[in-house]
Length: 474
Ligand code: NAD
Image 1: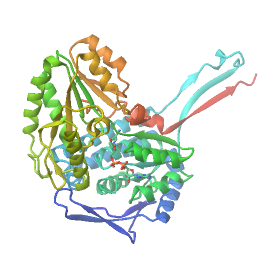
Image 2: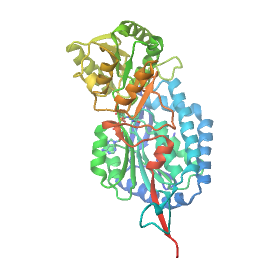
Image 3: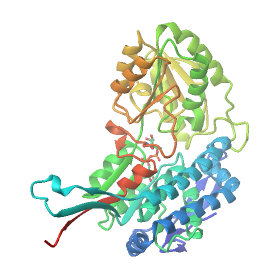
Image 4: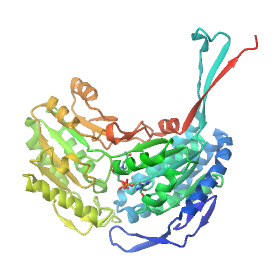
């Protein structure tokens, strides 16, 4: 287990350390080095030195490093799955999916590394352009800072490091302090895969101190951040003139029309609302159903949810493990309690033991309750009646967020209406907002973010367009 900091290709131990615990048993599994501000400075200097080295690698060489990383990830798959489950509390069956997806992410990046190119521009389309030949190319930005959340400690780190490498940048990574170990292991594999010294640096510690120092530093060309809107607001206010990509939260709406396959909706929602204890940015949170289906859908949804196995994430049978911290389970318990005091009813769940919160379905909620208005980021979903499909679209769109929304219908007009009316970065039809293939453009509107990830799109955001205009001699 890698407990140090990675600076300029060397693993360093810091004097200060912080514990990482098994999120189910609470037992300490590692003591990780906490970076000082000097370490942050050293990591950025190392990245600054490595940036021109990265820019000079051929795209073939960058692609080979990314492919080698996939090979190494596969060779240590079981160990990585276990580590994800231990430090994040994710059920191991879903940690397996995360490792597979990270392999996909690096594979797509290896492919995209060979497609980072520009195009010609017909400069003679301008009155003053006669005799000029124009084209643009993409250039790496230099130093990229990647700040990541706890809920996908491997694949969300991969979504930042893989495109940064494909684009020819050097990176400093700061993983979430609750889940620092998987990101550290990935850095180890990148070095083993042949990434030059300093092209990946790892800084560990609290966001408010070491994260903030990274964000403020003038050597940084770009910050790529995944986390909460509150943190994103602080980052943008401290970043100054740097590029940012922000991947933030959601209040996952699902709209169910009268022609939907209710068994499919119930199974998809039971998974989409509760896996990883609902700590997924595109988790199912608000389900709007038309009157003719709501009773039957509710019954099936409750039935499927009751079948979920809650317990030790390392057990193969477990569907839902603990939340990341007991205080998070207490927070959602309090939100549900407040909703009940205002008239909501819990149809299942509504039970907490330590950091485990049982999958909970609410009805009789209203738009002013926290469980509706805020991102729940917990295993709680609400089901609401809507007069008709149109009304459901209106209500689903009444949110500050805008990451992904979903509709279940077989009717093409309803699908097209939903696409037009919902102000979300992604619209998923006949699946939940959780659907994500790692190469697709992914990101939020409104307070759900700025920019898009998905390898091709992340690479675009990690490169500058450089225009070239050549005037012919005569
Ligand atoms: P968080 O915002 O608390 O922390 C994310 C990261 O930011 C951590 O590494 C943290 O140390 C760092 N950080 C905190 N304060 C900082 C500061 N002042 N300066 C710099 N860095 C700082 O988020 P979290 O609790 O780890 O994750 C949950 C949130 O992430 C949810 O809102 C969820 O929706 C969102 N999320 C979004 C996506 C997406 O792709 N859109 C994916 C996963 C999670």
